[in-house]
Structures are given as C-alpha cells and as structure tokens.
Length: 311
Image (cartoon, rainbow, N blue to C red; front, top):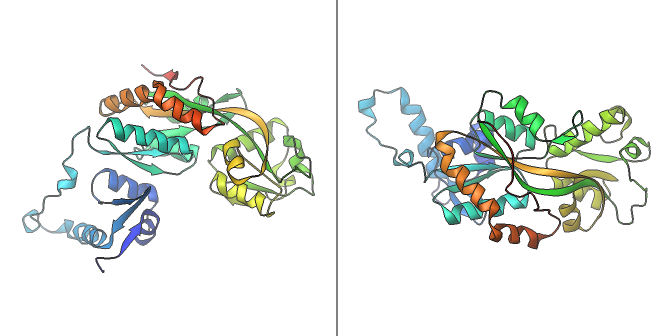
C-alpha cells in the first residue's frame, strides 16, 4: 500500500470485516495507531498493513518475532478512552477531559442500549444514556440495573433536554400526540433498534396501546437524530422522534413531548478511579456548565449530580 493512503475507522472496520467497536478497542489497547484530522480519526495504510502482518506472525516461535510493541506500554493515566453516544455535549466533555488530564478521548456514535452493552463487554469507558422505561416512567436506571448486574458502577447526570417530534414547518398535519402517528396519511421515519429515541417511541406505543403495524414508515430507520430531521426537512417523512437541539439546527418545527434525563454511566473499577474523579470534577465545574448553557436547549440544573451509585 502507498504511504500516502489512510483510512477512516469505518473503512478499517469494513476492510477487516469487524465492527467499529472492535477497531476502537484495538486503538484503545494501543494495537492500532491513529492520527486525527480535526475530529476524525484516520489510520495510515502502512500501519494497518503492519498490524495484519504482525497478527499473521503470532503463530511463529517467539524468538523469530523480536518486536516490542511500544504502543502497549502505557500508564493508567495516559491511555485512550472511548466515549459512546451522539450528543455534541459529549464532544465538549471529551475536550475538557483531554485538557485537564493525559487521557485521549475517542468517540463511538452508537445508540444508548448498544453503548450500554458495549460497556458491559468492556468496549467503552463512558456511556451516555437516554432510555425511557414505560413501566416506571424513569430514565436510564432501570436498564442499567438490568444490564450491569454484578458490576459496580456510577450513574451521573450530564444534562436534561426535550425530546419529541420533528415536523415540517408550520406542522401542516397537526401532529401533536403519540396517537397521531397511527393516522394512515402520516408517514414517519424511525431510529434504529437500541437507540434512545427508538426506545422512547416503542415504550410510548406500548403505553398508548398502539400497534407499530398501524404506523406508516415504522420499519424505515436512520441511525442518528440529524438524519431523521433531514428526512423531515426534505419531505421524505412527515414526522420523526428526536431532540430539540437538532430541530433548531436544521430549521424545522419541534413538538416537545417529554423532558429526558441524559446521563453518563461508568464502571467503578480500580482502573477507572482517576477517570471518574476527573469526570465528576468537570461536570460540577462552572466552566463546563457555562459552555453547555451557551449552546442553548439544555438544562444543567442536575449536571454532575449522582443519580445512582453502587457500593
């Protein structure tokens, strides 16, 4: 491969035929070196070649491979960490973490449930959640308790924000309630399974006893808030579920339906003691909170508060 060639994380995952989380895990362990172009991580083709050749050589006698991978020699305070979730607030958090520590932050853009499962599997370090539980009316904690059974963890509030419907300018179809989605002339665009927006929709359909089969477009999925909002802007759909901030970004109307608590969860392990202390300090700082306030459409009245902690 030419030295000038480089790949995105998506391209590397496709070349190796593994998930992006697997690639992030290899980066986190220091086995795949990357560089940044703005916010995007890229990998030199020669480094990918080296990794593939080195992996093939692992069956040879140790003496025939006298190579020491110095990327694996790293202290607890200097390794990469993965923050999973899609909100821009997470990028700000990552910037603050890098500014006040020697951690390097990598980003995964998975939905809430998939991110939580990745945390359980050890593939993420900080996971953001906005999962509504219809049985309790509570956000996040019911899911965390079920999935992280047996693990020590801490759940912290990041922000609160409005969730609801993206609708076209002027809301010409007068879509205002969950029951409106079952009207035959209304076509929606959905989020992928495991995302917080999809969980909110499915829980509300259950509460209101609405069958998903009655909703036009229910099976059509996008993987982020922006794509859903864009589908409404271009007229591909009449409605989608998302957050207020994105509606204002793309210039469509928004129907608020619920205030959701957007939390962070981290495992309480000896290796994470320093990271947890740093994150708690950042969330409680006036500098971080003022930066969040400047964005608008976020409520920081609970930011930094401990929602739940195992002992």
